[in-house]
Amino acid sequence: MKAKEIRALARENLKQIPKKIYMPIGLLLVVANIIPNIVDQATDSKSWVGANIIFFLLEIAAALLTANGYIFFDRWRNKIQKGGEEPNAWCGLTGQHIARLLIYGVIEALIIGTVAVTVAVAIAAAVVGSAIPQVPVAVSIILLILLVVLLVWIELRLTYVVYVIDDDVRTGQKRSVWAEIGAGWKLTKGRVWKLLCLNLSFFGWYILTAFTLGILGIWLMPYYNLAIAETYEQSKEDRY
Image 1 (cartoon, rainbow, N blue to C red):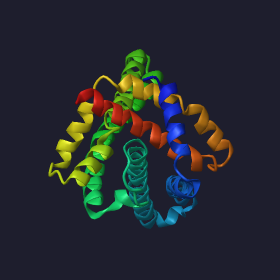
Image 2 (image 1 turned 135 degrees about the vertical axis):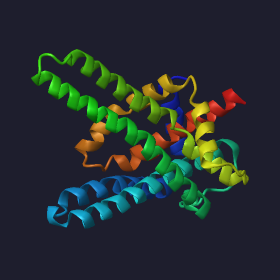
Image 3 (image 1 turned 30 degrees about the vertical axis):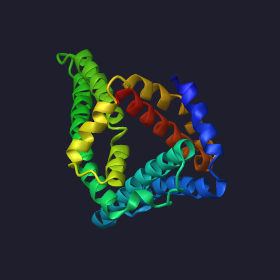
Protein backbone atom coordinates (compact mmCIF):
# COMPACT_ATOMS: atom_id res chain seq x y z
CA MET A 1 0.00 0.00 0.00
CA LYS A 2 1.36 3.42 -0.98
CA ALA A 3 1.87 6.32 1.41
CA LYS A 4 -1.12 8.17 -0.04
CA GLU A 5 -3.40 5.20 0.60
CA ILE A 6 -2.09 4.71 4.13
CA ARG A 7 -2.67 8.38 4.95
CA ALA A 8 -6.21 8.18 3.54
CA LEU A 9 -6.98 5.15 5.71
CA ALA A 10 -5.47 6.89 8.74
CA ARG A 11 -7.71 9.92 8.16
CA GLU A 12 -10.76 7.68 7.94
CA ASN A 13 -9.80 6.02 11.21
CA LEU A 14 -9.24 9.41 12.85
CA LYS A 15 -12.75 10.51 11.88
CA GLN A 16 -14.12 7.61 13.89
CA ILE A 17 -12.35 8.70 17.07
CA PRO A 18 -14.21 11.45 18.95
CA LYS A 19 -12.34 14.76 18.97
CA LYS A 20 -12.74 15.02 22.74
CA ILE A 21 -10.66 11.85 22.97
CA TYR A 22 -7.89 12.31 20.43
CA MET A 23 -7.34 16.07 20.71
CA PRO A 24 -6.22 16.02 24.39
CA ILE A 25 -3.76 13.24 23.56
CA GLY A 26 -2.55 15.22 20.55
CA LEU A 27 -2.09 18.30 22.73
CA LEU A 28 -0.20 16.27 25.31
CA LEU A 29 2.14 14.90 22.64
CA VAL A 30 2.82 18.39 21.29
CA VAL A 31 3.50 19.83 24.75
CA ALA A 32 5.65 16.86 25.79
CA ASN A 33 7.94 17.35 22.80
CA ILE A 34 8.13 21.15 23.06
CA ILE A 35 8.69 21.69 26.79
CA PRO A 36 12.13 19.99 27.05
CA ASN A 37 13.52 22.30 24.33
CA ILE A 38 11.96 25.40 25.92
CA VAL A 39 13.39 24.51 29.32
CA ASP A 40 16.78 23.78 27.79
CA GLN A 41 16.91 27.18 26.05
CA ALA A 42 15.55 29.13 29.00
CA THR A 43 17.80 27.62 31.69
CA ASP A 44 20.61 29.74 33.08
CA SER A 45 24.00 28.38 32.00
CA LYS A 46 25.27 28.82 35.58
CA SER A 47 23.08 25.96 36.79
CA TRP A 48 24.47 23.57 34.18
CA VAL A 49 24.22 20.36 36.24
CA GLY A 50 20.72 20.99 37.52
CA ALA A 51 19.51 22.11 34.11
CA ASN A 52 20.80 18.97 32.44
CA ILE A 53 19.16 16.76 35.05
CA ILE A 54 15.82 18.51 34.51
CA PHE A 55 16.24 18.33 30.72
CA PHE A 56 17.11 14.63 30.93
CA LEU A 57 14.03 13.85 33.05
CA LEU A 58 11.80 15.84 30.71
CA GLU A 59 13.21 13.96 27.72
CA ILE A 60 12.41 10.65 29.42
CA ALA A 61 8.87 11.82 30.16
CA ALA A 62 8.47 12.99 26.55
CA ALA A 63 9.70 9.63 25.23
CA LEU A 64 7.27 7.71 27.45
CA LEU A 65 4.33 9.93 26.50
CA THR A 66 5.24 9.60 22.82
CA ALA A 67 5.31 5.81 23.17
CA ASN A 68 1.95 5.98 24.94
CA GLY A 69 0.59 7.91 21.95
CA TYR A 70 1.79 5.21 19.54
CA ILE A 71 0.19 2.49 21.66
CA PHE A 72 -3.05 4.42 22.31
CA PHE A 73 -3.75 5.10 18.64
CA ASP A 74 -2.70 1.60 17.61
CA ARG A 75 -5.27 0.20 20.05
CA TRP A 76 -7.87 2.60 18.69
CA ARG A 77 -7.10 1.40 15.18
CA ASN A 78 -7.63 -2.17 16.41
CA LYS A 79 -10.94 -1.19 17.99
CA ILE A 80 -12.15 0.49 14.79
CA GLN A 81 -11.17 -2.38 12.52
CA LYS A 82 -11.71 -5.37 14.81
CA GLY A 83 -14.03 -4.16 17.56
CA GLY A 84 -13.56 -4.29 21.30
CA GLU A 85 -13.34 -1.82 24.15
CA GLU A 86 -12.05 1.73 23.91
CA PRO A 87 -8.45 1.96 25.11
CA ASN A 88 -7.61 3.92 28.21
CA ALA A 89 -5.76 7.18 27.53
CA TRP A 90 -2.80 5.89 29.57
CA CYS A 91 -2.85 2.32 28.25
CA GLY A 92 0.80 2.51 27.23
CA LEU A 93 2.05 3.61 30.64
CA THR A 94 1.39 0.55 32.78
CA GLY A 95 4.20 -0.71 35.00
CA GLN A 96 5.16 -3.41 32.49
CA HIS A 97 5.15 -0.93 29.63
CA ILE A 98 7.31 1.62 31.43
CA ALA A 99 9.88 -0.96 32.55
CA ARG A 100 10.30 -2.33 29.03
CA LEU A 101 10.20 1.07 27.36
CA LEU A 102 12.93 2.41 29.65
CA ILE A 103 15.18 -0.56 28.89
CA TYR A 104 14.46 -0.15 25.19
CA GLY A 105 15.22 3.58 25.47
CA VAL A 106 18.64 2.85 26.97
CA ILE A 107 19.48 0.33 24.24
CA GLU A 108 18.26 2.68 21.51
CA ALA A 109 20.22 5.59 22.99
CA LEU A 110 23.39 3.49 23.03
CA ILE A 111 22.92 2.45 19.41
CA ILE A 112 21.97 5.90 18.12
CA GLY A 113 24.54 7.59 20.36
CA THR A 114 27.35 5.45 18.97
CA VAL A 115 26.38 6.33 15.41
CA ALA A 116 25.91 10.02 16.31
CA VAL A 117 29.38 10.21 17.85
CA THR A 118 30.79 8.65 14.71
CA VAL A 119 28.94 11.26 12.64
CA ALA A 120 30.39 14.04 14.83
CA VAL A 121 33.88 12.66 14.29
CA ALA A 122 33.24 12.59 10.54
CA ILE A 123 32.09 16.22 10.62
CA ALA A 124 35.21 17.20 12.53
CA ALA A 125 37.33 15.35 10.01
CA ALA A 126 35.59 17.18 7.17
CA VAL A 127 36.22 20.55 8.83
CA VAL A 128 39.88 19.75 9.46
CA GLY A 129 40.18 18.40 5.96
CA SER A 130 38.91 21.68 4.51
CA ALA A 131 41.68 23.50 6.34
CA ILE A 132 44.44 21.04 5.45
CA PRO A 133 44.66 20.35 1.70
CA GLN A 134 46.45 17.03 2.23
CA VAL A 135 43.39 15.52 3.91
CA PRO A 136 40.87 14.09 1.38
CA VAL A 137 37.78 16.22 2.12
CA ALA A 138 35.67 14.28 -0.38
CA VAL A 139 36.26 11.07 1.54
CA SER A 140 35.17 12.70 4.81
CA ILE A 141 32.01 14.11 3.20
CA ILE A 142 31.08 10.77 1.66
CA LEU A 143 31.65 9.07 5.01
CA LEU A 144 29.45 11.66 6.71
CA ILE A 145 26.62 11.12 4.22
CA LEU A 146 26.84 7.35 4.65
CA LEU A 147 26.71 7.66 8.43
CA VAL A 148 23.67 9.96 8.32
CA VAL A 149 21.94 7.48 6.01
CA LEU A 150 22.84 4.71 8.47
CA LEU A 151 21.37 6.71 11.35
CA VAL A 152 18.08 7.23 9.51
CA TRP A 153 18.00 3.57 8.47
CA ILE A 154 18.44 2.40 12.07
CA GLU A 155 15.67 4.71 13.28
CA LEU A 156 13.32 3.33 10.62
CA ARG A 157 14.21 -0.26 11.46
CA LEU A 158 13.23 0.44 15.09
CA THR A 159 9.83 1.92 14.15
CA TYR A 160 7.76 -1.05 15.33
CA VAL A 161 9.49 -1.91 18.61
CA VAL A 162 7.01 0.03 20.76
CA TYR A 163 4.12 -1.85 19.13
CA VAL A 164 5.82 -5.20 19.71
CA ILE A 165 6.31 -4.32 23.38
CA ASP A 166 2.61 -3.47 23.70
CA ASP A 167 1.56 -6.68 21.95
CA ASP A 168 3.68 -8.68 24.39
CA VAL A 169 2.20 -6.86 27.40
CA ARG A 170 -1.37 -7.39 26.16
CA THR A 171 -0.86 -11.07 25.41
CA GLY A 172 1.25 -11.77 28.48
CA GLN A 173 4.18 -12.98 26.41
CA LYS A 174 7.43 -13.08 28.34
CA ARG A 175 10.26 -12.00 26.07
CA SER A 176 13.34 -9.96 26.75
CA VAL A 177 13.39 -6.39 25.47
CA TRP A 178 16.25 -7.38 23.21
CA ALA A 179 14.06 -10.10 21.66
CA GLU A 180 11.30 -7.54 21.18
CA ILE A 181 13.74 -5.23 19.43
CA GLY A 182 14.71 -8.13 17.18
CA ALA A 183 11.06 -8.88 16.41
CA GLY A 184 10.39 -5.24 15.52
CA TRP A 185 13.54 -5.16 13.41
CA LYS A 186 12.38 -8.20 11.42
CA LEU A 187 8.96 -6.66 10.78
CA THR A 188 10.57 -3.68 9.03
CA LYS A 189 12.58 -5.90 6.70
CA GLY A 190 11.83 -4.81 3.15
CA ARG A 191 9.73 -1.88 4.39
CA VAL A 192 12.35 0.76 5.10
CA TRP A 193 11.79 2.57 1.82
CA LYS A 194 7.99 2.61 2.32
CA LEU A 195 8.41 3.92 5.88
CA LEU A 196 10.79 6.60 4.66
CA CYS A 197 8.35 7.70 1.94
CA LEU A 198 5.50 7.77 4.46
CA ASN A 199 7.50 9.92 6.86
CA LEU A 200 8.58 12.28 4.08
CA SER A 201 4.96 12.61 2.95
CA PHE A 202 4.23 14.34 6.27
CA PHE A 203 7.01 16.91 5.77
CA GLY A 204 4.63 19.58 4.48
CA TRP A 205 2.38 19.08 7.49
CA TYR A 206 5.33 19.58 9.82
CA ILE A 207 6.13 22.89 8.12
CA LEU A 208 2.52 24.02 8.57
CA THR A 209 2.66 22.91 12.20
CA ALA A 210 5.71 25.10 12.75
CA PHE A 211 3.87 28.10 11.24
CA THR A 212 0.96 27.50 13.64
CA LEU A 213 3.36 27.30 16.62
CA GLY A 214 2.52 23.64 17.13
CA ILE A 215 -1.26 24.04 17.25
CA LEU A 216 -1.79 21.96 14.12
CA GLY A 217 0.14 19.18 15.82
CA ILE A 218 -2.91 18.50 18.02
CA TRP A 219 -4.48 16.96 14.91
CA LEU A 220 -1.30 15.94 13.09
CA MET A 221 0.18 13.74 15.83
CA PRO A 222 -2.89 11.43 16.06
CA TYR A 223 -3.07 11.34 12.24
CA TYR A 224 0.60 10.39 11.95
CA ASN A 225 0.39 7.78 14.72
CA LEU A 226 -2.59 6.09 13.06
CA ALA A 227 -0.70 5.99 9.76
CA ILE A 228 2.34 4.31 11.33
CA ALA A 229 0.09 1.91 13.24
CA GLU A 230 -1.53 0.93 9.95
CA THR A 231 1.83 0.01 8.43
CA TYR A 232 2.56 -2.11 11.51
CA GLU A 233 -0.66 -4.05 11.07
CA GLN A 234 0.11 -4.61 7.40
CA SER A 235 3.63 -5.80 8.19
CA LYS A 236 2.22 -8.39 10.61
CA GLU A 237 -0.34 -9.58 8.07
CA ASP A 238 2.33 -9.91 5.38
CA ARG A 239 4.67 -11.78 7.70
CA TYR A 240 2.15 -14.15 9.25
